[in-house]
Image (tube, rainbow, N blue to C red; front, side, top):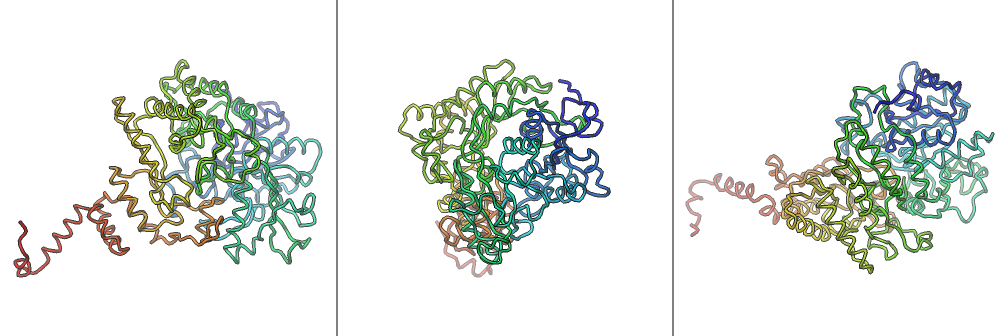
Length: 640
């Protein structure tokens, strides 16, 4: 399908003139390439503001060197600048867990690494404040969202304060920003100043104690100050329990964190104030966001260039937002919340039909999923109970009895999509929660639907390999991860193998595992290697734990305490410790086996050598024997 230049949000002065505009209301600066697709944040916010009647332009990946012409070229917006690093935290996007440069930047044309700075939210905001000192700046996106209070930065190895202390912006819009940014635009358009917007839900602002809207009340949670957290890691751990709980509550409390306090409740203290979020979106609101007139294509300026992230998702459809899994190392709930909001079947089918009309579509949807593949249609039966709930996870340590775990609505979506003309097959590329499939509730209809879902998933929606994420085998590590016991993986694999056998299919489960997670020891990794070998896995989908801002795992790793119990937790911190754990993933590689054997002996688990490395163990014994003097060899008793 051919699109005109004016079908995209304008990115240059010429494109603004083609629309006949003389000014722009909002200019968005993004660290990503501009892809006009509902999976790319700048496009979503731009289209949302456009639908509300505002003139919006996007400056993707501006050059922050030299004369800063990219920051000047569109001039001054009438209302505000929006600044985002893109779809990922810039440091996660750029570096591996070992702080090495990734092979490519997935959100840049041809995967180039030189098109965004580190911490673009800070860099862009400083430039804009220098060039346009009186224009409001609003930061949004994942980087601002996850750095909205004191947070550990793995790449700088230090505790950093709320992002607003480093970036001279006026507000942070955290979480999914459609409601917040639209209301900011509306109120600025009505004549209010940016300082008058401090009462808005789902924003973060800085203020002295005597300028906090409404003053500090008993309803507010006053966190340990940034300085206290720098002096005492336990104080940071205490803070984070409140931060996570309030991120996942229907009716959250306001969070206030002092910075450079002279004394408790000194009116001159500077504070970061996090207003409670908006309630979760309704299905109608979510549909409206996905039904905006996206072209679903990269901007024409990228013609002939490959944007890796777009290539991965262009034939996929997202069917819900939010995740109630509460995995300790995941940022989804901190950004999207734990309450799952589903699109309507009609909205999903409209987008699938759009995908089916793309010139390069061959009939195969790459993914029909979401943050977790099989949470569509699930939620609390008693909504009043959900409104009072503080649990960060609805399924750990046990599945909440109030949770409706029926897969029936999801099955309806799958079948409706597969019945559309032009759809040969819809694959599920998102991670599947097998604990939801295996859960036995008191509702027999839901249990039957789960088994029906498993059969349909495995026989109709897997392209030979199904991705699942047990993450570990150790019960203690899994408890810290908030993942189900490994025994459930055994149960699911038996179910998977049985269904494949009954249907004459040769398919594989591809499990994901993490090393160096808080609480994980070398002995735990050795046991993981043995258990997965027994299951005949040679692991491919593996990674070292990467401490990313605003996750419970990161705070545990950094502080050394479990934020909920304040008990000490061991973590592998040095490169040597991390590599010692990671090597066990690759027991089948000859070049790793000698080191693994030495490590097993060092940690007192020589009993695992014969099972994990039988051939290498036998060769090692033969080598030892061959090195003995011939006289000693002759004295050995014969074995019959």
